Each structure stands twice: as structure tokens, then as C-alpha cells.
Image 1: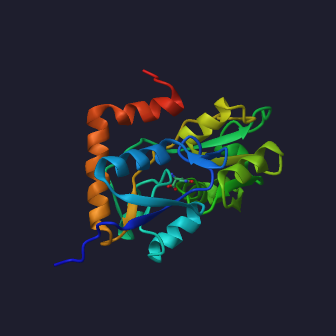
Image 2 (image 1 turned 135 degrees about the vertical axis):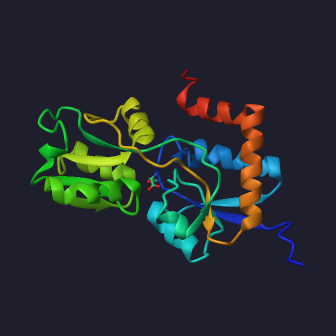
Length: 231
Ligand code: GLN
């Protein structure tokens, strides 16, 4: 008989700043991921603690079994599926390029030649930019979090960055001086992750809780709380 996990407090890694999914307000972490985690834990009756490690650091901590799970706007990519087990998808996403709001020279990837492009270590945006950098002849400048990466572009040190479109759109709507000039790239949806073959009980609870939240309207109200009830 497997040892009961009842009473266990799961450690859940997340990003430092990735609004509207996780971000700090008044010293507290809020956002769609944070509210989903709280609602699912309540629905399923388990305890957890959030560890805002940063995206790449959380990936590594999960792989090293230093944390039990991870919720961080994490894309369910085929490559990651070899290392992690994912929940059912809970949010559609994908990568888009952003440039400075007043920039009128970068209109597409072909305008990136010879330029610096900011990326975030360990992300799908990084992988995408890396996959086209030789073709378009630009240089990657890596950062650990999205705020630093955006700052690199608004300050003019780099001409563009790549990040998830729901996150860039939210930041622009909040007043960040960036704009998008290209179509978004097809990307993978977000999922909750555990290390492969581990914490299967936690994963089951997450999936059951998520399904319950979708059925009872809580999922929709959490998303609407941060994004408004759009169509
Ligand atoms: N969705 C992207 C990924 O999984 C970025 C996640 C993030 O930066 N928090 O790579």
C-alpha cells in the first residue's frame, strides 16, 4: 500500500512575474494561475505553498524534485512531455513578437537582421526566436523574467522580444510601451506540470478540480476577473 499523501503540503513553483497568470500585488501573488490553484486545492482538499522561483528556475527545481508541481503559464510542448507530465490544457497560448511602440522600422522578422532581440530563458518564446535567428540574422539577448525582457525593448537596447501573446497583450493593455506587428505563431496551450511519473495523486486532483471548476463556472469567473468577460 502506497504511503498516504494525506496532510501533505505540496510545493508549487511559479514564475516571478507573468501577468495576468502570476504577479505580485501588495506583496501577494495573484493571477489566473494563482486563483486556479487556490480554487482547485479547495475543491480537492489539499494544501500547497507557492514558490515564485522564476520560470526557468522552476523548471529545474521540478526536474530535481525540489518542488512537487509547477503552474506558470507553462506550455505543453512535445519536448517537455518527455520530462514532465501535464494536466489537461487550461488556457490557449502561443508566441508573438513585440517591438517598441514608436518603432516603425521593424515590421516583420526580415527587419531583425543584425539586431538584438530579447528573449526569456527556458521559454517557448526563446525556442521560437532561436529557431528563426539564423534565417533572419539576429542575435538573442536572454533574460530571466518577462519584466526585464520588456524593459530591454522599451529602453531601446533590443529592437524586439518574443513572449506569449496573452501576456504581451495584457501588458500593453496595462500601459507597457510595446506593440505587436506580426501575426502570432501557433503555440501550445498551458498546463499544470509534475515531474514525469511522480505526484500522480496531485495530478489527478488537479485534473478533477479543473474539470469541476469548468463545470461550475468558477473557471470562467477567474479568467473574467483578470481579463474581463470578453465574448
Ligand atoms: N508559455 C511559455 C513557456 O512555457 C512561457 C512561460 C513563462 O514565461 N512563464 O515556455
